[in-house]
Image (cartoon, rainbow, N blue to C red; front, side, top):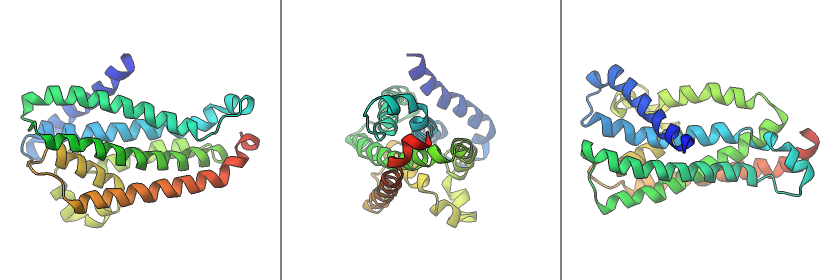
Length: 226
């Protein structure tokens, strides 16, 4: 219960900070709904990758004593955070009534959006957790990179600002596409285009294939490396 509440309180604390820092000059209509729709998805990604990067190393005792596929450890972290995200969305849908969320069948599209984001996260988790077995600084490096990715993703500010000045940086950031897809569903008055869906599908599939490939190449050396 505390973990779930903290998972919801973190976006709330960030929201309060962003209201003070960014709202006045954001040029965004319904700023609270705009920011919250991005924060909910971002914290799922941040939490699941941050916890999964050390999942294999942290389960070394189990791996050495039981014949359990190492794949289950990053997978279990992903499923656990996915469940927390779904609970957070329930609270989000209730609270955002006061900030004018449009209740329609379009909101159901958030579930395939979350699924694609979870597949992307799982692929990245497989990559990070397997490489972390051999290079234990990966977790520290990833924790350092995450804040940069966060501020390069238009969550607290209008995407038009950064797209106008740094279009290449934004378009090379895969998280941008998932945040934009989720915001199209939760914030915008129209459903996301097939073009946006295809972007997220390709990114998810590519990341999972890369993560699974690296994981399969390294998994037979996990026991000796741990």
